[in-house]
Image (cartoon, rainbow, N blue to C red; front, side, top):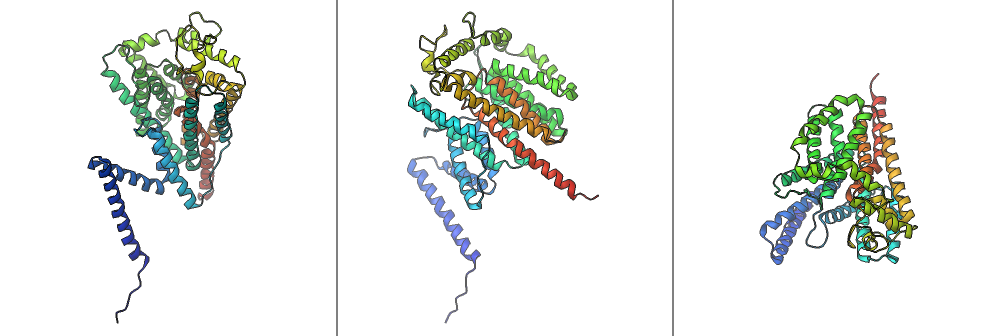
Amino acid sequence: MLRTLPLNSDQIRAPLVASATIGLFAMALLGVLRLGWPIWSLTLVAIAAAYVFFTIHRPVIGLMAVTCVFFAPIRLDIGVSLLQAVGVATAGMLLVWFLYERRNLVFGSIQMPLVLLGLLIVTSLWFTMDADRTTFYFRRWVFNMMFVMLMLNLVTDFKAFKRIIWAVMIMAALNSVIGIMDSSTATEFNHRSMGLMENANSFGHLAALAFPLAMYQYLYRRGLVRIAGLILSVLLLGGVVASVSRGALLSVMIIVAVTLFRERRRLLPLLLVIGLAAAATPFLPDYFQERVGNLAMDIKNSVMVGQDRNLTSRGYLNSSGLKIWSAHPIVGVGIGNFGHYYVQRDFTGELSGSDATIAHNIYIQALAEMGVVGFAILAWLLISSGRSIWRARADSEPDSQEWIYFGALQMMALAILASTASYGSLMNNDLWMFIGLTAVASRVSKAARTSREHAAAEAPA
């Protein structure tokens, strides 16, 4: 009589893994053939499987992937963007991972005003003139809230924080490289490059927001990292030029001026960057010089909203936005409805527009579309974010890596305040990226300080 040997777990696991792999491959092959896709589409399945594997084992990889597609707003044929598809898939996988690891979800104080913002959007569905557009904004709010949740729960130490900062810089630089190449081959006189973004203004403001992140690496780091910071800074300045965005240029000028005052110890490196920019001025495109040549007058005629004479297009939008707010002061006209009221005779100026016109200013947008309640929520968000990043740098050791990165994020905050006054939306990716980074800054700085204290306590006398 034959004797049966007991099977151990490894003997059972190997056939199961092989069978599951073959079965999944067969299903993928059948699906590709059934849909009529080329056979090389199987590589996309393999890439997706690899992404799932690495994200489950290293969740911060999923967060970095979401950060990268944040700045590549590619829309798929299925009616959603690449960001939405990757974001939802990543959030779902990481939720399963959290349940498997029995970890508790972390909620930050920044989420209170964000939740109130979502409730205000839902409330506006009762009186909106464009329900589809308001629903679109609510859908973007949901995806952005998911991103902030990922940041709060995955960026728990300074190492992960640095990776996200570098992902932002590299994606902005990639946009700049594509924008510079596009601008150099353009034949139109008034050409404005969009990079990988949806329009030229989005591209220019992305480059301006990432510029201080790279500049601080050049100012305070050493060796190859400093060289990389200088190269990225130059590329990002080139992206601002290629976009021909006056608001982005103004943001860069404010950042450089404030940095000259704050970081006086690094005066010579800063003067070198300014000198390189000045030397390149004669070689800039004619359309760029023509468009930004009267920047000071444009700013003056954009903020003087009390009169309609000699106003710029931004001035007319600001003036109309304030008129809309004065007529609907409490909760506004509903998010996404600025254009529907702008075309009405009571609110429009001499500048023509359509119901798709946007405010081009998040402060005016908040007042007009969500009233004083929405503006108070926006102020709460910005003040809370500013306090978090200022507290984080104050808690850091001077000249440490944490101090450098948090200083760069402070300048990014300044760029956000300046750039969103000339372009942007309450649901734009760059604003929510800033909110996510500042939401974790204070916790990351505390974790870094605790790590230093433990290292000092354990060091031999």
